Image (cartoon, rainbow, N blue to C red; front, side, top):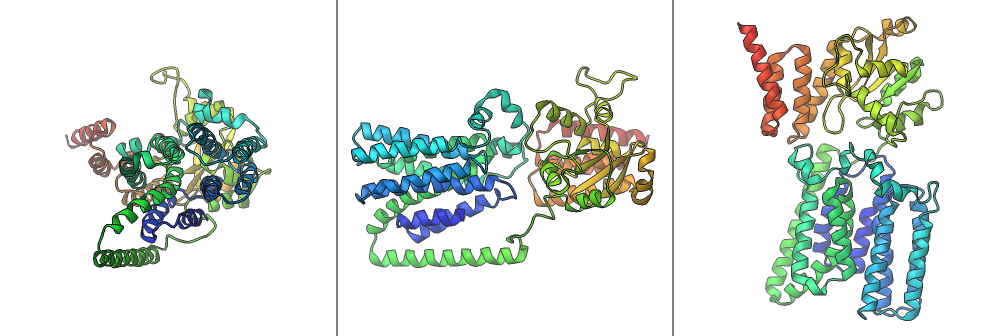
Length: 503
């Protein structure tokens, strides 16, 4: 739907097919990395919709269409619906404010063609749309969460809030080709069209470009808005260029573009058929612990659960109210969020550099404090790192693995009330290590620039006592990120241990 909206806007502006083809490709290229069973999909859809409604109004004013202002009142229901589906509705408010400010400047400089009635209706409609967005369960609070520094803990550990440029430099994400391509085209258009560009369009593009540079989650919104604006401007430039060419040369270029477009389409569909990545289905394989939750439900695992935060929403949907999660990605409590991280990272102390002799590690005290009876781990996080607690418990006599697949592993306390289920489902610690090695090895071959998967392999092999395999994994990780001092330190440590064994 999002792609069709962008294409519809380009067609309304009569943008050349080949220009549209390239820009729609960039949109598709970027949007495939933004899909997922999350409410943010509504924000991805409504962002271009708000822009299109406002541009439709401007187009109708330009041709002096009667009641051109009527389209503006679609903003009210869209913003009302959006603000009750996802917190990203603030992006819609940002677009509205940019139009109010920039169109106001143009009106003041007498560079806009609005009549008095259209100006009044324009500001009334946009103000009502802004107010409509506040008719939601939290009212104005979404703005506080988005802009207040005290809520920064909610985004500090989230991959999407990291700069796509810094994520590439640290090798945890591939190069942001879509962002780079669109920014290059934007700068090119800015140089060639400069004073002829619409002030509102420039403000939107600059705003979204900066937002995208600071946080990867905003890249898709920048690409969507830029595709429509840049499409319009590129079409103007290309028409000027083509008008200067001879008919013969113009026809040859037309044929060349047609062949490239056809080949591109054939290669695209051939690759999709080969990899079978383009399919609509219920998320049940890679992103959700379906089988693990089935296991919990079937065996009616008792007691309190510690779970990976990303799985919290799915577990609640499946098991509430019988079983309650420890946490989910809403991060409703900063204290709980911190304690969850301390447990999953197996933090031993936050007071001293090292745990004093005879003291119980912090992670163990927290597990006891919350009376955690079983733990549902993810194998690897979004960066490719294995939870440190998972490796700790794999060799811990007080905890037993009872379930494992390529998505999740479940550990349960070794206490009398669990002995029956332990006797039935106990897994060896080697099975746990093998699952981590399998998943990390597979992901390392898929994400060829990310060293984290290889570092995870190194850690796991080291825990297994396979020093040479650990050394090999760390050396491959160093090839991907030559400046990683921690990896260099581990290589030196393992080489020293291997030498001491030889002696």
